[in-house]
Image (cartoon, rainbow, N blue to C red; front, top):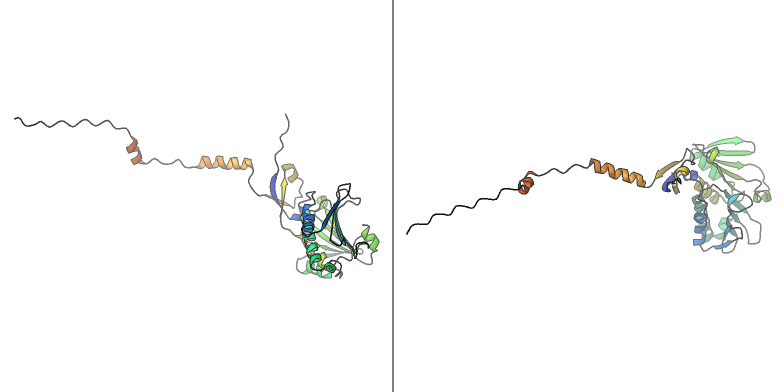
Length: 281
């Protein structure tokens, strides 16, 4: 007899950075398409979206060569090497990408040069993590590590000079996000020249604990990290049936009104009244 698989249910997974990928590019690409950016595809199934002047390019790369599912590059002109690059790997929730691309499209629309200018070392970003968010600073060799209070997110800042070509090739990076426990970890990177306001946006997007929607089966729930919480948005059909049954059992039996009984009880027919004798004449 074939095994019956329980249908997927809708859950809210929190924090969202532990919700895993949905393996679809829509959340990250739609904000750019809504802003009028151009869509293209290659023969392998990779999808690319470019700004109107082709200086900002976002790739959703399920068949990419480097293993990064998302790659976002900004160029000073359409034919120049990129100034900066952001990548996110296969397990990154696409809602995080969408938050970043929404801010990117908005900044480009307001002032195209703003997405290329403003790299200041990210010190305002890391100071905010340490001061306002309670992160701690750990020193490693040639790297400063900023770690969240729960230990689930670490931001590595590589110190010293980095070769721009090596950064663009993915051989090294200025900023590295490590997200999740060791058994469920994913990564995002950013190069040296990413403007600070976009680094701040990326950091906020990665660390945002807000829940996200997922449709999951029981066996998929079991694969979530133990630090994630999954809250059903509605009871399952089995739970609905149990609730109805319990409600039916606990419903009180309506009491019978005595006057109703009296009214509905069959009574014997009344005897005819005796006729009055008339006067003799």
